[in-house]
Image (cartoon, rainbow, N blue to C red; front, top):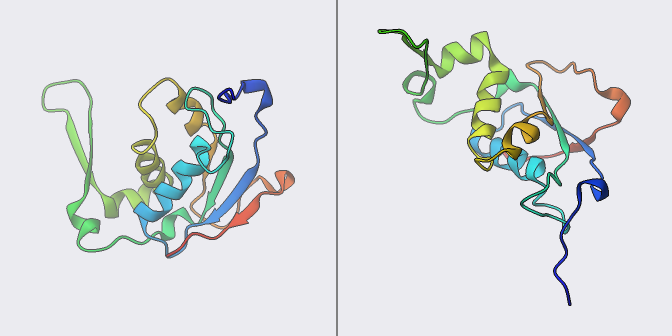
Length: 144
């Protein structure tokens, strides 16, 4: 019996909708990463994007435990001396709530050329409105 290997032309992508309201950031991110990689499918291949498209709504209403709102920081550097900027999780949720989920999911995806392609299949919205009703995404419940 030969081992099955998926080909890019054989992949059928489905659309999933996840409501992030009141769900822990880590639990939400692991479920999204699993759907983006395609590990929930029997046709999973690590060298082909077999995953689906994930639409996340209410990204601003995620839950974190402990003191992460004030103690967790996101860092970026301008490239100039003294150009390090740090932003707390609380500030990031107020200014760019979608980036929190995108950053968390990006850290859980494989570190190779497919990562950028998988992240293109992630759509995060801070509110309930999204523009993907035409694709009829299937609602998925994530355990809180």
